[in-house]
Image 1 (spheres, helix red, strand yellow):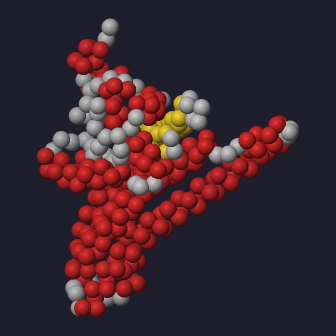
Image 2: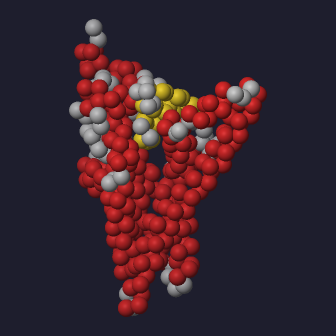
Image 3: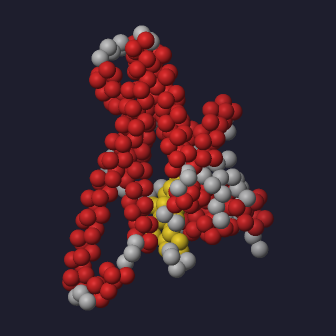
Length: 326
């Protein structure tokens, strides 16, 4: 199976799909029509040479995913805001006043997006990196070794992550997002397994995929164990605040290494890699749900806006592509 290099994310009542230097957002609007928007993908790192370097590309790919993902979430949310009063006001405004209001809103959205991304990173690092260590470090009171504390930290991190996923999966709005997440995976699996992109084929495809962000988070946990055990074995650090600072400083490296493994997993059928991918795939049973056919229609619209799946099938599955020709 050759990777299609399509990546995506579920948003409110829709899906974002990215391929190469372009991404799309398809949203099922309240009137049931599908709105599709495409934009150029621009990395926060302008140097394309650096973006080809292992580990470094993973760090900036993670940052880009946060920025684009937040932007797409905010865009999808605009379809479901209460806008009746604003529309009435807009009708009474001149075109110049409407343009000024729109410009002000775009500026406010930009500021909100920046604050949201920063807060997301701070909360994620605090909740899944710093807090597990603070809890595990209580073992120092019974003279536990740093190795024991690091292993306990990993266990706490896993438990916190699972509890977080279980908690948010009970929310009705999040359940629908998880259903769109499943539709996103099903679309990519459909194409990468040589089937034409139809609702019927997408619905019978798997909702689990090795390149998923959930699997990425699992590898972040595993890689962090290896890094922390190795680092503190070589460089003993006795003060707690310095141990915390070092953990925070290692986060970009851990993210970069985890990205490389996810990238490898999506491009190989190696048995060892497949075995290591299984825990991440199992976790996806929490973060994806079976979608409805109308959700798969949204996913297909998002894919077709950025990816020529017919050309992909012709190149990688010529026999299947030929069988579909009239």
